[in-house]
Each structure stands twice: as C-alpha cells, then as structure tokens.
Length: 322
Picture 1: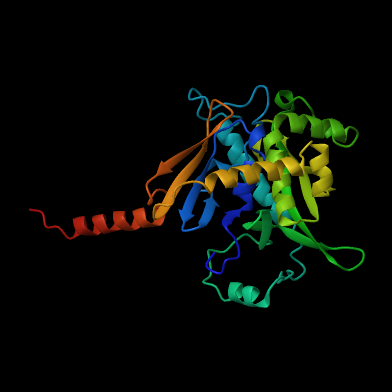
Picture 2: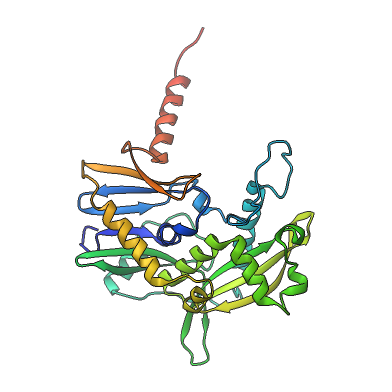
C-alpha cells in the first residue's frame, strides 16, 4: 500500500465470497477499512466464512436443534466435521518423503523482504501464499493474497500448482446419492447432486483456485466409515480439475465474477474517509441482499481488547482486601 502497488487489498477467501455472493444462503460478513486512499477487505477472526458449510443450498438444509445436543448431523457438527476433513485431506495429499518446493516468484526485493519478515504463527505444511495484482478499472488495482496447497511435477518437468478441497458424504439417506455405489459409474450424477446441495461452496472454491492461478483443483470425495460414525472416514475418490473447466461445469462465469467484484469495490471506494474508517459488509440472513454498516474504528481488534482485559485483571490482583 505504501509503495502504491494497489488501491484495494484483500484475501482470496474474502474476494471469493463476494464473487459467489449470488449463490450464498447463509449470512456472512466482511470487514472493510478505509486507510487514506486505500481500501482493505478482510475476514474477521472467528467468522463463519472459515467454516466449510455443509448442504447450504440443499432443499432440506441441516439445522441446529437445541433439543438434541449430541446430534452429529446438526449444522454446527457437520461444519466442524467438514473443516476437519478438509484439513486432513490437504495434509494427506502432501508427499512428505520429498523436500518441499520453495516458491520464490516475482520481484527479488519483494521475495527477500518476505523471507526476512517477522515470522507469523506456523501455517499447515504445504501452504504457500501468492500475491497477485489485478486491474479492475483505470487506475484501480486489486492486490489479493492467495493460497496454494501443493505442487506437482508435470511430464515436461515444470511445476504445476494445486489447491486441494474435499467434499464429504455424511448420510446417503439424507444427501440422496450413495457415493459408494455411484461415484465410479455415475460420477456426473454425484457432482450434480453436490452442486445442488453445495452450490455456493463449490463456487467459492473455484473462485479461490482461479484467483491463485492454480493449475489444478484437486477434489477429494470423503465419506464416513458408517453414517453413525463421524470420526472415521474413507477417501473414496480423487479428481483433478482445471479450474476454468470446472467453472464451466458448474456454470460459473468469470465475467460475472469480476463484474460483481468490480461493482462492489467501486461502491466501497465511495465511502467517506474519516481518519481510519471501518465498515461491515453484511449479507442479510433472510434476504438475498448485502448491507454496509459503519462500525467503531476499534471493532474486531481482538488483540487490543485482550491486552486491555489483562491490564484490568492485573489491577485487581494488586488490590488489598481485608
């Protein structure tokens, strides 16, 4: 931002949510911050956007029922299970017998600065960040931090980048298609059923792969060992898709993706600049509309709140009581 590399800065997760917004059903929010002429879009800590929502667009979507706290097929339980499966699948796809490939592309001064940065908390093995710049309009540049999960060596000796995702089957009686019976013989029918039940999630994953410039989207089909066992799972199949080809299969048009992103960014750029202004982009939970709310500048600054809480507790400890 300080070097004028772009006007808008965001992550692939936040941008993919906007691009796939017409397919979303569940509520979501994105934090928007104006700092001078620059605009920052990010996902707040603890946001539902980090969840792998299961059957969001299904006709009978799972619900959280307070009557049964141990329901393994409730929305919360299924989302947690799907997140765990995606993490384990991404790690299982890594060949740990070979040394990792170091990704150092772009301007040498930038790659050297990245290598010398203050180390963040360790990321999962196989994860690489790729910063890409896109031109939305005249003098309006978008910088996106994208994620890549793995790489593989192609037949011509070059490196191909991959993003890995996993779809999960929890109960064939509910989903409507038994993967163990249909995945090999009727793969198109399985994908069509997943597209009906998880239309938004598949669109987001495809957007993220296209934004990162990934050569392949590696999709795993993971099923429970038994419909009543949400701990043990089997990988029934794996398919490599070209992101652009998969986007065509699920009727995701790049011109619509970028049209939505450009329109939203241009609208956000008109927000008034009053110091470091902060806003919340919120998708209505009951209607297909997105609203913009202005919030206090220190909203969602969890580290500052934790420090303030710690100071208050220390003051209490130093007090004398009789």
